[in-house]
Length: 398
Image (cartoon, rainbow, N blue to C red; front, side, top):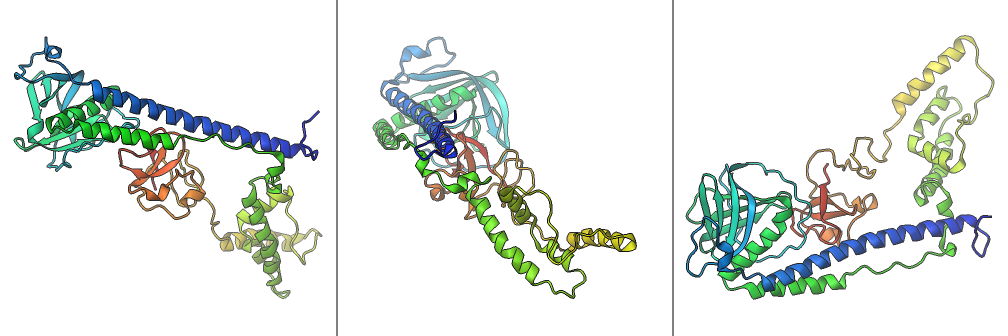
């Protein structure tokens, strides 16, 4: 026997069950992302206090250390990269990013690998011990530093070298390498306390944004629009169709020999589809003022050939979602998808009607990206893009 609510409405009970399952699923996804971020902040906070290195850590390395130089971190699998063109990197900062997203082991455009070996971070410099020699980047002469947001590449610019170079690391080791390098640079300028204070601020802000358990949907909250395929939007289209069709038929004069064809062509295809979804009728009804008696001979052949010609000439393009391939993106009338195109830095004002936008979407200052949990953000290009939603999954293109 089917379960019902107090009013005896089975469909309302099913609607409430679906709503509660969806809300719980979204809550668990957001809470899991929040916990991952919280664990990462706590781990970095502990690392910032305990990562002081030791001179003994450099034993066995083919590297001569200065008297007060200590080793903080060694990454055995690293590659030396160089930028082919002239570039100017931003000045080094003490910004902490606990969420780097999914890094892919690839090279950015204009960057090539020239050597391979191990990377060593000390309190004075970053050193790459390669097969062709040694490459040093002293913190005191560092004028530019940049971490690629999509690849595990760190580029460094120093005053005594004209060409920009850096290291390519394993994707799993890149996040911790970048943080330890930030700590080492902070030690060189005596600003480690500023890094720890920044982590505390990030942790406090993150604690305020913990997801709350959603409210429980009850059968009494169900609306009649839930019974219509497509929901409220289909009901609005059907209401517009109910007003538009009589007006179109009324404007067709009785002396117009092609009145039937013009009336049929004036009805948009999307409106006809919505009408079928609401009424469940799939058989076309005859136009007003026409007879059901079959035509014979030449007149029948003439009508059969005229109707397709008239419809094909007068049917406007529907103003609905584009039919172009989107590679998994939601249906939208802007042509946004994941297949290819340009980055979207100024999306349409109705973009959140078709995509699931993150809170504070319009505060972003980058390009449109999809987060790991399916939401979209306008902070693409920033290291903090999708920080509370599992990191950046892919770029939305137009």
